[in-house]
Structure formats: C-alpha cells, structure tokens
Image 1: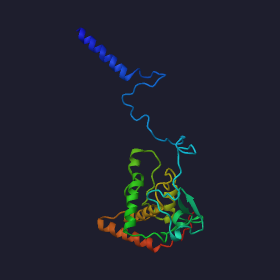
Image 2 (image 1 turned 180 degrees about the vertical axis):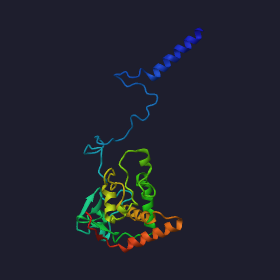
Image 3 (image 1 turned 120 degrees about the vertical axis):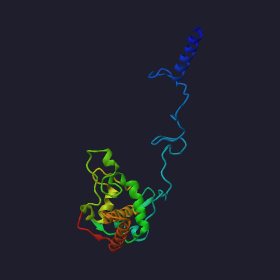
Image 4 (image 1 turned 90 degrees about the vertical axis):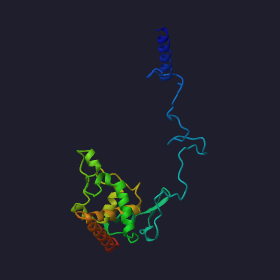
Length: 240
C-alpha cells in the first residue's frame, strides 16, 4: 500500500508539472512540451522587419508581376477606350471586355476576342462548379448546398429563370465581377477570361434546362455556342 501512495504522488507531481496550473499568469515563459507552432520564424502582416532597408515587413510585388491565372489584356481589349489602369502589376481597362458595359449601359454578346467553343464552355463549367455551384446549384436553379444548410436566408438567384435569361450578357458578367445583394464581388478571384467563360456556361445551362437526355444537353450546348457567336460584337442593351 505504501508503494501505491508513493507512485500516486510521483504521477500527480509529474502531471501537475507537465500541465501546470491552468488559468494562472506567470512572469516567465513556461516549459512547453508541445509548442504547437505558437511561435514561428516568419514575417507577419503589417509588422516591421529589420531585414529590409525601409523597415517594412510587407513587400510590394515585383514590377510586372501577374498573379497565377491572370494575363495581360491583348490587342483591342487592352485599352479600347484609351484608359488603362495599373493594378497589382497587371493592367485593366474600362472597355466592354473588362466591364460588360458600354458607358452606363450593359452590353449583350461576347467580346470579339472571346472565342466561344467547347474549350471555353468546359472552362466555364469548371469555374462554375468551384465558385458558383455551392449557392446556385449545379443546374443553376438556386438550390445549392448553402440553401439547405442556411434556411431563412434570402433565396439564391435561379439562373435558369426566364427573368435571368432575359438579362444581357454584360449584366451577368458585371454581377460576377461586382456582386449583387448577398453575393460579394468575385473580380479578385475570377479572371476576366473566366468570367466570360462562366457567362457562356450559364447560357448553356439556360439552353439545356429541361433537357431529357445527354443528346439534348449536347444540342443545347451547341445552341448556346451558336447564339453567343451570333452576338459576338457586343451590342448595347437598354438596361442599366
């Protein structure tokens, strides 16, 4: 029995020494058995650093840097209106390709530099699944996982609704870029080209809504491609 109490005492002292008195403030750094990466050798945001001459820990991107997935606008889309804005190392202009607008009006149809083909629709499908489907649903009917887990929230837009079908392409593009209602702006994470790819895919979803089989879906995709190419130049829509 004596050995039992002796062993119990040793175990108790060991546990208290390892864990410590929880909630007690100490004037010295306690012994950490598992630091759990509480302190790391790294530069934290908005913190100074003596490593650089200006003393700032945060550094600007190297001039000319383009984020992965982005590319500099080319040709007529680079500065159609003569206004190119330098932004985080890449340029952005206020033409139809970059804004979906002609001045104060939304445009309709794809920009001349966007080729609507199977590759563009596939890219739009990939980006739609990653960025949009959680709210709008894979079919675009607005019944994504978010609507099931957050009941009571304002309903997500039904993209295959006739009202949305009637919207010009430029307005759908603008909504992706700038956001609307509870939907925030996606222009920081979706490239210009991918925004137009999503617009093309949304049109394909609208064409294929109600399709009964795979053949009908294929025909709907081809109809979406043909329709987009017919409106290629981008016309002004009276909707603001």
